Structure formats: C-alpha cells, structure tokens
Length: 413
Image (cartoon, rainbow, N blue to C red; front, side, top):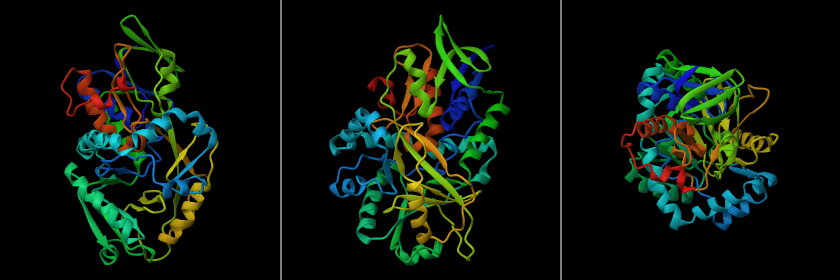
C-alpha cells in the first residue's frame, strides 16, 4: 500500500495537517491508535484562543513560588518524579521566562496565534460544524481590583497583536453573566476568541471532512517507522505502509517514536483533568466560558454539561491520576457558580506536550529528508492545529509560509 504522505497522530494537529495536505492534492493516510480527537484534543477547555499571544511563563515572583511549593494549588501542581525526569527542560523553561528572553518569544508566538481563528474558519465551514462554535469570547474573572487592573494593562498592550478585549465592572458583568459569586469584582472580556461546546466533536468533524474529501484514516497501533531508500516505511498493528514523506504529529508521544532516529527534543508534559456537571437547579445559566483567574480553573458550558477544567500538573505521561487538584477546583467552582452533580464516574485526564521556549516545533526534521515535525504546542494545540496545518503544507510544498517559521524550526534545539 503506497501513500504519498503519512500523518502520524489524529489529534487536532494531525487532523489539520492531513486536511491541508489533502487540499493541496496529496494522497494522505492518517494513522492513530484511536479514533480522531479522543486524546488531548478531547479534554481541553474548548477555546480557540485568539487572545493567547503571550505563552505561559514559568513563575519567578516569590509570592507565586511560595504559593506553588506546598503543592496544594489549583492552577499548578507537580509530582516529584515528574519534576526530576524533566529537570533539564524545566530549567530551560525557567530561564526562558526571564524578561530578556521572554520578551523576544512573545512576538514570535503571537505571529502564529494571529492565524488561529482565521485558519479554523475554512475547516469549520468544510466540516459543516458551525453549530459547535460560538464567537462571543470568554470571561476572565477577578476578585481583587488590583489584579484586574494589572491584567487589563496587559490586555491593552496586546492590542498591538490584534487582540480585542473589554474591561467589565460588576454591574456590566451581571448583565451578560448573572449568578456569579459576590466575591467577583469584574472581568476582562476577551472578545475575538471563539469557544467550542464539544472539542472532541469538532476534531471528529474535521476528520470526517478529510475522509469525505478522499483522505484515508487507519485506526492502528504505531510500532515504528524508518527510512528505506527514498521512502519511509511505517509499521503498524494493521500492516506496513510506505510513503515519500511522513509527518510526526504525535503530541506527548512524539519523542518516544523519534528517539530511535537519534532525535532528543526537550519535551516535557503538563497534564490536566476535567469533569462534567449537571446544569444548576436554579434559574442561573452559564452563558460564557469563564475562568476564575486568581484560583486557576475554568468552567465551560459544554454539550455534556458544565465542564470544569483544571490548571496544569507537572508529571510523567503514565503516572497514575491524582484528583486532588480537580476536587479543590470543584469546591471553589461551586462557590463561584452553582453547578450540579457530576455526570461521569471518573474524571478525564490528558497531557499537553510542552517545549522549554514555549513554542511548538513545526517544520522539517534536521537529519532526515521527507520527515516533518508538528508537535509541542503546549496549552494551545486546539487553538493552533489548523494554523499548523497551513504552515506545514506551505513548507512541504516549497512555498513561502504565511509567517517567519525560523522560531518554530527543530534546529533551535
């Protein structure tokens, strides 16, 4: 079975890459061990974050560090073994978060974020899934005026990158989102971010559009892949497949499969949890995606109920789940907005693949012709999947990409 291009990984990034390559006239085989959109792409907050032009930096201020060290926070927790195994990339992440380095990273990161909603748009149209998407932004809630003022200052600075926002006082907030805790003093309304009421369904809709247009999806366990002459051989649990080019869009699993080819990228993981809850019995209705900014969790009105999404957990990929972070977020969340009982028996757990300079790897593999890389999107894989597909397609066809891709190339490591 001969394919022109094989894409490994059917999360939002892999599906988007496959869709773009197919639109460019390639014959594409997409491979994953599970149906599209059932791993990390399933369990995110469902935001296409046009406002997220500044990536998450490692905290440096003493106040935050003292809060995080006891390992009881909602926004970030850690496992000792996970911290030790990722010590080197975490140190680089810490160093890259100092202002002299971070201020150079932000405009590079903002350049790809600027493509986020505009590149989702044609895929949403092709997949006929407009009903999943809302375009009224989301609310970042604050309990103290000083914290809100500081965030609003940042929001105004980010206008240079096309971010649209509005500062809301409590009266304005009550008009659009009643039923919130009296502790909330106001919010930043991020206006040109889109929200998706079922992220997994969106990815599956994109995958169906890919198949209906002539692409092929194979649900099979990937064993390995290697260069054989001018072609690549991909071994799976359902046979061997060959192609002139292979794209690795395997997210948290990318390094595992690239190591035999002598690639050692400083990938580390931030895990996250979510749970769905019944709508409240009261007249209150959750109209917006909301973030309790000073606590570090989100509530989202999803198809399956109100989803609560935790912050990050620094841990190994296969470490057993630890639900303390979610339980504490649930306790705080019920004070913020009166949602109902849990819908599922067990919380969902997933992993975000991160790199120490906070930017993904998108482009050719340095040592092998015909091998292309697309992973390491951190918190923004769902946001950046379609943009990654467009940019990689342009690079693979020898075109000038929409933005400067040097900051995202693998050679920087």
